[in-house]
Image (cartoon, rainbow, N blue to C red; front, side):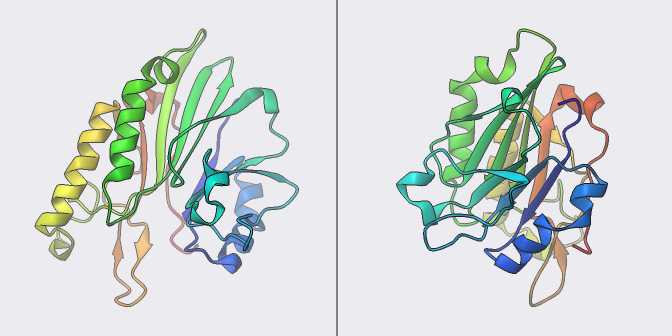
Length: 231
């Protein structure tokens, strides 16, 4: 695979929303080959909605409690199985795959970070420290890392600084722990600061809950990172 195009979205467990994504013309016109979803729609047996064009990748501990999974990755079935593999991660909220090519490798962390918990951020930091060699070394090319998903954190670093209602002491403290984890993993913001991603269902005000963090040395490989607010 020479170009990785990713569609990321929290579908809020909606089967209709997930169906719409899978059939969305954007996936074709933009050449999407990886779909990363948070809070996916799951059946009573813990299976997600997909089609034969996509391979569903569940968290590595999905079988322990199938209905608990809040992170699902879909990879285009046409992508060679020799070019990617799943990595184990001890959470139902994180799915990790590693994609390789002549250019090197990229490890993609699909993350749902619970707004009421600090556990996922801690796990991400521990994982990076424990698996540093596998994440940062490659026999050819360069190694890249990306965290993306629904992080449920507000901070002036990425939200509109004028929206002071978001920045309670508790919210800022939780966000700064995430910022520390990003720095520890050597990542930077890939989605430009100030870009909103979430419209509140009641107030209809926009804020930033979804994030894309990319290895600091990988900016030259990034073609674009943007949102489709109409979606």
